[in-house]
Image 1 (cartoon, rainbow over the protein chains, first blue to last red):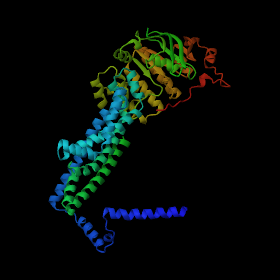
Image 2: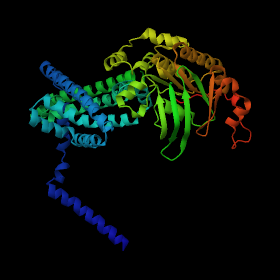
Image 3: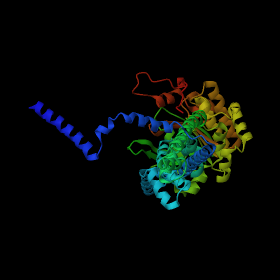
Image 4: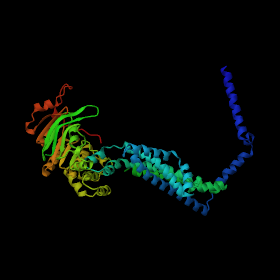
Length: 256
Length: 265
């Protein structure tokens, strides 16, 4: 009995697989043709000859710079906005503000960068403007949440000691809370910047500037050589950022 | 009159009475030590005097004012005239010693001056002078996390001295120091209080030190004042009664309790 059921299940799976191929219009026999390997090789070979002409390199360099600038500016804006939102989100201004700001942060974070970019392209037009805004909005949601949690976990005794000797709220924050807090804020910000550089190179696909936009245009026009240069540039950019953020973390966060 | 408590009590949220019906008058310029077994309420008493804790019953007068009847702004003004030395000074690990000491005057400085001081210490000679009294001038630009427990306690004391308050409170100020250093530090505190007419109230668990440096001794036990008399009239029987512990087979000798205690920082 059991064996029959298993057999039937196996048969049904097979039928489903064949039906899927038929439904999707995939030609099974075509996959096995001898010519395919050669064609795949030729396609890959076109990518192995990156366009290294001066005009293309200049254009890629400009694109890389734009991507870097977008991510840096976006992350900086996000860090400032995130810190401003983190204070109420950590309950420093009472629970109604806390609940409201948490909702705002969740909304900012729930919408992915690509969707923000598509929205911002409609709002601010094509180009790096939209990309920067998109990164800033999404990252503000992420950093605001992380900052608020760091703020809640920071020991309160140093700030309370300042209050006890007559210091104001703001001075107590800067002398008692921030010295413990800022290395963590900096580490979070650097990490998100690293993410944002990768993200900034993709945002161009929806028209938000940078290397992504170049890649999208080259691929749309079947210019494999040019696209290959852009991909190499992206790779180098990510490697460089990795090294930079590792170094800066060592320098400011752990070492200090 | 620098400080007056009448019938002051403190009940924690869980219903435990930390202090019960404490009556206490301390005149301006007096130097008083509070002694007593662990958990007797010494820290709670100092907390009330520092306006960190609000008494749940009774009356409180600090420097002729009741801090809990004042507006928040006026209370902060009053607090700037009261210095509290913590047993484990809550200093941010990465803050430099000079900044931590100069922070003593934050209650007297405006916001602008405080912010500039954060970026660039404004009174380095002043900070160096107080630290020199405590033999710590060479650590002026060290980070607080590089200091030992005893050094941190001295930075906390330097901050309170720099604040220059009219009422100076100290909660186990020398608990992490060796006997020689503890003796020296208490002498510095007493000299500061004497020369400026500052009222000094310190809790100590080393009875010897209390008797040697303070003219007036208050014994606290189970949230109440057990005795309050001049140092010369404190005899061993009184101390035995103060530190008697029914739970322990042999009661610990109070004079032997001068061991090092490293606070968590």
